[in-house]
Length: 302
Picture 1 (cartoon, rainbow, N blue to C red):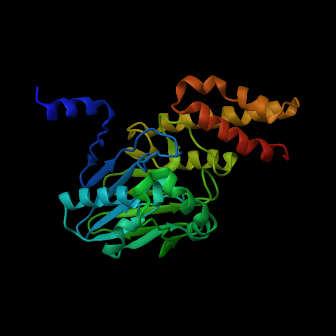
Picture 2 (picture 1 turned 30 degrees about the vertical axis):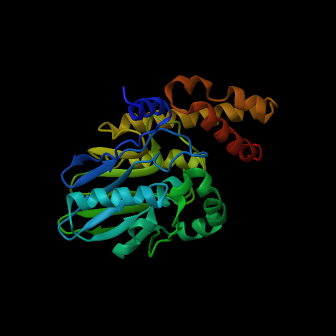
Picture 3 (picture 1 turned 180 degrees about the horizontal axis):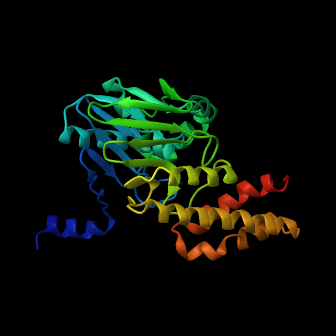
């Protein structure tokens, strides 16, 4: 064995290799990249949510851009491998950094940036903390990060024409977050929910749980052929996935209310609330703890 080969073999255990940036075609003209199931925490890498694009006769709409310009750039390169049509729209389903901090990768395309009517305000409120945390979250990939607010704000419903296919956008009151937007491709009957729906991964609360439960019923009424959640696998049976999320949120709400009724502390409640759901979800301990800590003070004042 040569000395150089010996050195290379010795280094192999310490080397890390980037996973390929894969794209799945889920319907004609509809593509999804699935993020990893990691917590949004230091060194998470920026690639934990589902990001997508839809190709029409006139051009392309991007739906969420990932957690860094580097991830957004990978998505853009994937688009260019499939089509050279112009990127007309970049849609953010909500404000969270894992979904929206890849926007800068698309500035060169001069798209219309699209989001909820509350998205610009929410971005402005969170800009300082998101940009401050970005280097810790994604390291060198933070370079060039911007929070780019929508140039087209959706307050109720609106439609985008891609040529031969229409995207129907719906804005919701505070539910998962203060700025939730769903997207329905009427051509393929594919519904993007953003984080209004989690599959496999524990739902994360940054809004109002009772309102979120109402929105779940609105999403159920769409009767889409397939649903692309904010996190997790594409679901053909959207009703089943919505049922799972509804069960978790309903259980969490009931358990926290019961704990408050009996005078238990927040820490005691964190240890007990929604434990019947623990085996059913990924990242349960850390996400459920945050959820209890968020809703406990709100429910104390009911």
